Structure formats: C-alpha cells, structure tokens
Amino acid sequence: RYQKQDIYREETVKVYNASKIILDIHTLFGKEGTMYNVTPRVFEVPACRAFLLTNKVTQLSDFYKVGEELVAYQGIDELKKLIVQYLDNADERAAIAQRGFQRAHQHHTYAHRISSLLGTIAVSIKETHA
Image (tube, rainbow, N blue to C red; front, side, top):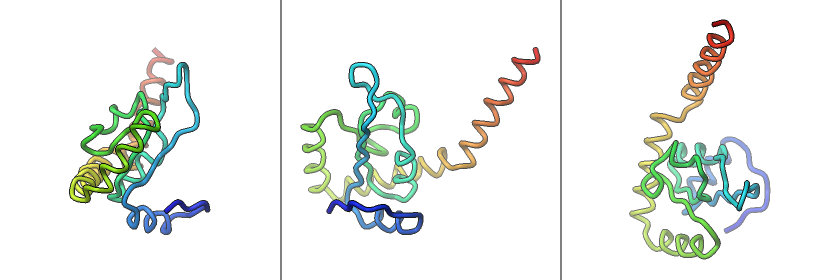
C-alpha cells in the first residue's frame, strides 16, 4: 500500500518493518539518465532490517553487494518484475534484508560516516599545509 504522507523517526522504522518492500525511487538523473549518488534511504532501510528495492546508482556497489544485501532495478519493466519476484519469495526477501542489516550496522552507521569525514578533513589539512 502506498502512503502519501510524511512520517518521522520511530514511525518510519515501524513503517519500514511492516512493509514487504521499500521502494527508493530517485528523481534526479545525470548525463544520459545515469544516477550517481545514493540517498539516505539506502542506509536507513537496511539498518531497520527491511528489504530495499532501489534505482541502480553508480556508487551503490561502493556500499553494498547489490543483489545480496539490497536489490536495484533499472527501468520500470525491471522494477515490475522484481516487485513480483520478491513479493512471491518471502524467504529470499528476508535473507537479503538480514544481510543488508548486517552490512549497515558493520559499515554504515553515523559513527562510520563521521570517522570517514574526519579522515578526509585531516588529509585535506595535511595537503594544504604541506
């Protein structure tokens, strides 16, 4: 069921966990329709142990094993096919969500992002003062 309303914090987790599939549909495309950046949902949904179906994005494989920890589609026909496939296969959907959950908690927490950001800043400062 599609919900056209804003949801916040704890309620978001409840909605993710009550849903069979969470769709992440991007609206901004680069050159030749290529998506370059991931959205926060790519981290939030797996962190809630929910199943994510998202656009194929250039950087997605930098963060997850696509097809094993979350699923990505390219185009409406593939999206429709994957929705049917995963609605019909609860065990596979749950296994992918579990692997995504493990990846998110091992590599994609706010602590990981802050550490990475501080590392980038430190390198930049060293290069500036070298």
